[in-house]
Image (cartoon, rainbow, N blue to C red; front, side):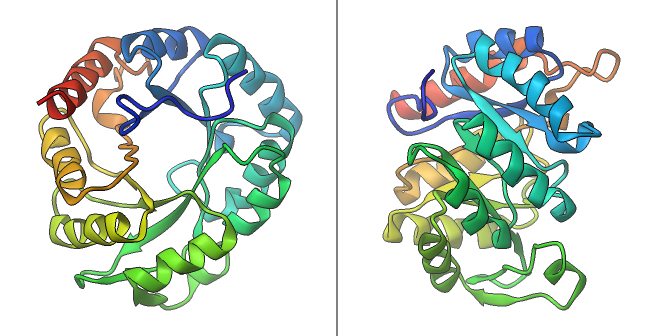
Length: 247
């Protein structure tokens, strides 16, 4: 199975949630494989149940599995590490303090491991206190440059900026994109991204020169009745990516 995510033009890969193996395959096809499918560890009571189910997603999508926390829940950090060790997926979502533990369990360098940092309301500063214990204390505000270098020290592939809250933190995000480009680090915006603001958010990262971008689009494209991510919306997002990069 493929070890690393597919990026359209080696630049952008979508991240959406999958409600079932069938839903994952439909979304995978809609994005022509340039996608990772999020499956949340929080939805499983045991490691064994999660592993058994997630393996089915891997088989259906050539390992385009993104092991998720569940709304950025820091209490899922250790479970994600355990699942990643067994599954060796293409993509792993982690809190800041969970990166080193995750990377140490991965036999393949190619797995993308992100690290959740949060906006502070201050351009140039991010909150790295996103772990199970640190998130219960005052924010750990550091410069973007320091955060990225710490993540590189720990073996992270990218920074996950959560929550974007739509366009609320767009100036902080703009500066983050600039620093990711300068320091050769990948960027994963997430939180409140929808069909309306997606193009602007992705365009900012592209214009900044970020080499690898993984935008997460979740609840806004989920059918409220079925719980499925709508493949037709994935297609819209994918066409937007092609529009941006094929200019």
